[in-house]
Amino acid sequence: MSKRHLLLAALIGSSALLACKDKPADATASAAPTTPSATASATPKAADSAAEGSKGEGADKGEKGERGDRHRGRWGGPGAILFRAAKGAELKDDQKAKVEAAEKTAKTGAEAAVKDATKEAVKGLHDDLVAGIKAGKIDAAKLEPRYAALEKGAKAELEKDAEALNALHAALEPAQRKAAVASIRTKEAARDQRIADRKGKEAPAAKEGEGKERRRGKSHVDRLVGDLELDAEQQKKVEALQPKDDAHAARRADMKKQNDALLTAFEKDTFDAKKLEPFDGKKARAPLEEQAKLLSALLPILKPEQREKLAAKMEKGPSPHGRRAAIDHDRDDDDDDDKGEK
Image (tube, one colour):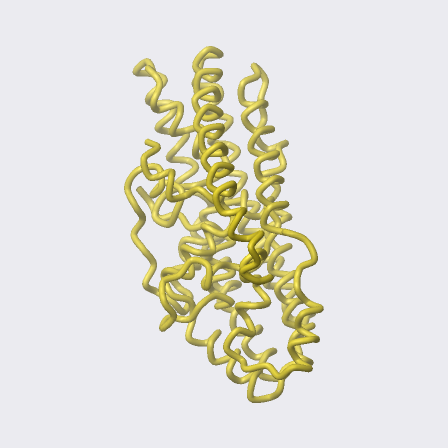
């Protein structure tokens, strides 16, 4: 299968706001910044070449099974789970051919020129952010054409994903569509229960008071400044930049809402994926704009030597584990339990 990276993972990874190469492979320490779930749901293939062309070139080849499909090296668009469910059904020969053709459309994605433009935009965004950190100021106007190119790439990829999903819907009979959706919902319910059970076990430890950081987990702000040796006054100012709410939980809930809407729509006789929210390419730029705003607020707080240290970390680039963490960060909290779900 062709390589397929989440756009968000590649863009955030390429701008190196993750753990650098010499950091341990810890998903918590390396996770990507807080981002809206709609962008996490949008998983265009334009990031393939972008991820390979960025600083950290040790990208994983992908993993086997469902877990592999959802991470690097496999197509993982908003409708990928529907393709997996459909291929598990008893299809007629002509249906198999149609499903395979539709999936090929999704995996092939946008034209090479679009992917190349996305790759250049990723590299340019990374370089602009590093230069801005060194200078002590992010030039928002300079980033605008980068965002526009990334948005264009996301839109092109998502259009292919939507086209493929529409073809899948047309290839299946009503009963097969309903069965595919039912199997997905059953797995999701089981996963949700495992997550709830695990969180129930962890709750007593949190109540016993292992500190604010344990309850909240490391935020993107924490990861940015963690090794910058902030003084007390700086720490107070940085605390004001911390997210006020549990953005991860809100994002996960929003993603679940979107996925539910996709499944509900897919069951019906009339279906057009292009009208659904997960296929809105315009939202691809939102998390990148947010990280630029965060850096703009953070830089005045840092001393020159601290800015240089942060810039050096970015120039080193992300580790392969950093890219994986970027993907995992916007998934449900039960990836380890998904290993056995085929």
